[in-house]
Amino acid sequence: AQSVTQLGSHVSVSEGALVLLRCNYSSSVPPYLFWYVQYPNQGLQLLLKYTTGATLVKGINGFEAEFKKSETSFHLTKPSAHMSDAAEYFCAVSEAGGYNKLIFGAGTRLAVHP
Amino acid sequence: DADVTQTPRNRITKTGKRIMLECSQTKGHDRMYWYRQDPGLGLRLIYYSFDVKDINKGEISDGYSVSRQAQAKFSLSLESAIPNQTALYFCATSATNREETQYFGPGTRLLVL
Image (cartoon, rainbow over all chains, first blue to last red; front, top):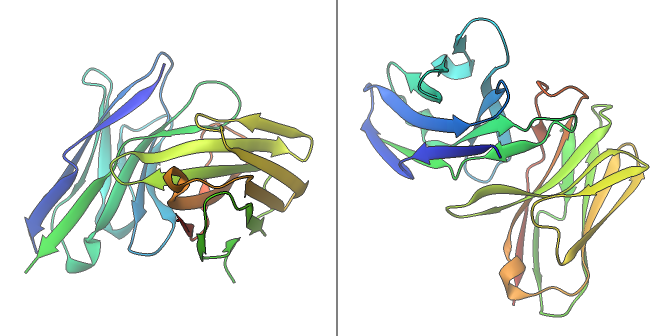
């Protein structure tokens, strides 16, 4: 069965500091991996995704993630945090089979302080 | 206008009441999903639908039912609401393939007293 683990339910960084949000997955098939962001009182929106090809994926708002098969990881990074990055971030893996079902991690809430 | 809309956005109801949450989309997608979000648990799939004639149970379907009235509309019902169904509910849509992005509505915050 596929699963996603996000290490750290809360992460706090200073404005301008590196953001690193960790995601590890388990999958019996080549994984399709997603990062979604949820701003307060809003739905989820896609930050970036990995399906095939280049393992370093760039997304919106300066975020990127690297797929590392040997480590079963898909960590999300941003070189310099901005106050507007404060949100909850979800890592997800697309389940094997034809239904495009997503399995989500528990989420990481990012706080950015001045 | 938003591609995926949900009504109502907030709802308070009492134990035992029947309640319906509605979702509409203008993206032309065949696939639609209902999730619930609970703090510390992420999002969990309740039901999903390939098309009007295809409806499937997800991870946590007990206590819920759905109706796919048209390609663009997918409703979630709580036949007899209970307090542990208090949660944030999201509808999502996607195109067909596994790598496709799911697009989420703004959510419905439900409180069952």
